[in-house]
Image (tube, rainbow over all chains, first blue to last red; front, top):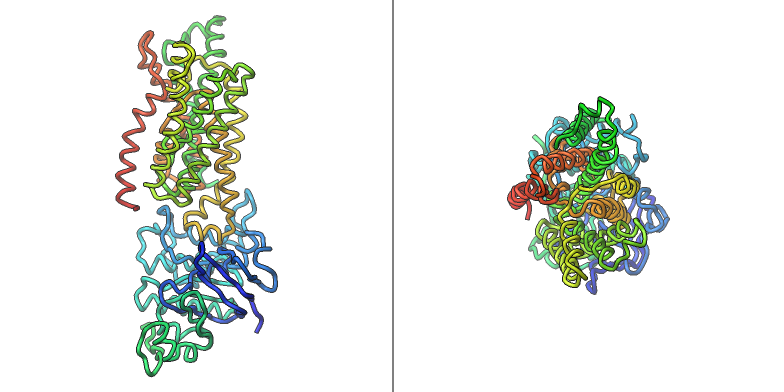
Length: 253
Length: 323
């Protein structure tokens, strides 16, 4: 499969502390890649490095074969949609305005949204399952509804790469499952989808590939059953699971 | 244009406020229509420039307040509260004190703008991006305190009581003795500041989802900061240079208008400029109406008396909402 991201001896630091380092790492188009690991393992840093928000002190991140730094801010924003872990909004905007932000990288100065923008916004709302929420005020939505709106915002960019930092955090199982289904569908459309997540059950059920991180390094890399081996589970997560992680079989009722 | 109606209503408000400023305080309307030369001069040379300057200063303050609030994602940001006005005052007082202002009419506004720019940069440096209400206000207090200390120092060493009272009265903020010269100086500078601030509109929208989110949407934060500081410094610096320190317009106006534009930072900008103009012209007309003979009420005092209750209200409200 074609590589979307290629990382080469990357070292990211906050001050003197190394937050994330890796040798060679490549992430493919059309795969759902999960990043798992305990708190402070460097999951967010890896996502931000891929998004171009953290610049490595050493090494290179390439997007479609071109160094990420060489992209202009707007061009990078058109190719990569990033969903931050922080789901708070500074102002109580109408929800559809939040979704529309996803089209901002494409707006020409002094021009409004084109017909195409409108179509993509509508489509993103549908794909994220946020119909019926768009005219409500963001601060009056429940956490699950907020997550759908923010997900729709990321989808509206219609980028070839989707990076999500804990998209299921603070959601109940039903909403988590719904979000995972959306991500799986995006990967199925050929979008390079990478998410950081805490729910090992969902990761093992949906991800094509899991990167397990601990203390800034990638400890295991592979399909869920391989990467989340009993050894890794006890060593990294401090969990005693002799039979590994069993993907749950519950579904949306 | 989504807000055509709002903008039309606010423009109407500006016209009414302008008319009020024209007619208040015993304007000889009948004499003007009778073709009286003095009444004509009074209109053209005294009343009109004062109204025009009131609008410009109000628009500069209202827009700067709206842009600062959008950037800091905090409704307490206002050029006065965060110390930018005081810094502009420091620059202007330095020009007065060292006598540079006699060199050219442009020296005072240029130094006020430089002062505002240094104050704004210091604020960004201390408060950091995405400042919480507390860190923003504390940084503003620090920046403002330093600027005010410098002004006090200049007043301390002022050569004579006349210069001292000149500085003191000027700091209170007023549109008295306005001529077209002040308008000529302020107009291009404020217009430039306004134009720069309006370019931040979409970036301010993007910032609603936080700094990382905005950067991922292609916003260059450093570039945005430079435009924000340059625009605010030009607008507020020029306003302070011609009218002194007039506070709280940038706080009150965006607060009143925000619900009318569904809290959208970008849509807040233009209406805040018009609303600021209308508010300041109204406040100026009111000061003239209230002032007795020989006891002028200062505009800066008036806006502070009106604005402080709003400030209290906002502090209580944001205290409840955010850390």
